[in-house]
Length: 108
Length: 116
Image (cartoon, rainbow over all chains, first blue to last red; front, side, top):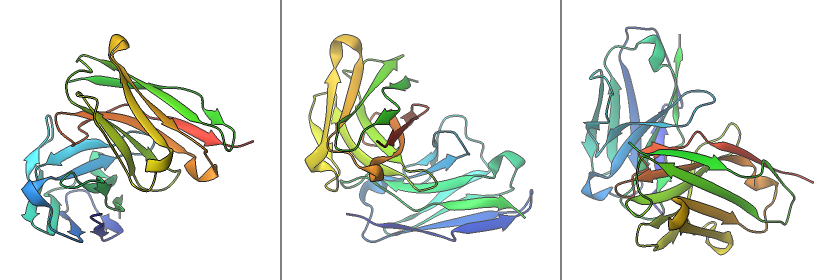
């Protein structure tokens, strides 16, 4: 099983600031099958990035993903009020599919 | 974009079977891959398993002995059965779908509580 470790657990930032979220994998995530999801309270997760760096439909370009192998990053260039949420990385390269523990981006 | 909707009992007794159905609209159940994912209150996401459009299944080893996921092509639905539940199975259960294993479309989720 690929274990995904996200850091930090909580990120306290102000609107307009840059957010950098990390996701480390216990083994290589092959074929770039690494995605990021955003979850707001009471709602289902929403896909924002897939294949490491491709934005899902309707996702603004302030969201970007990068990385390869075992180290991945989600960057939000300028935080908007609607971006404060929990973010999960997820791998679909190997069964079982796994998620990271999440990073909460909160308003400072 | 397909839309998914979970349905089923919100309360299940310990040791009994949790049964949920996911109704798919805007796309055929005979395409794509269909998964169940759960989230205990206040916790992270756990993948339960998936069924493909060819009806092959793949389960999380941590739950494999208790899980069955199947397609109902006549009703464009897929289902989850989780046997011998305990309080640890209390969670919001999401059905998801995608062109591959990636769960890119999600239902709104349904809370299932295991309690006597």
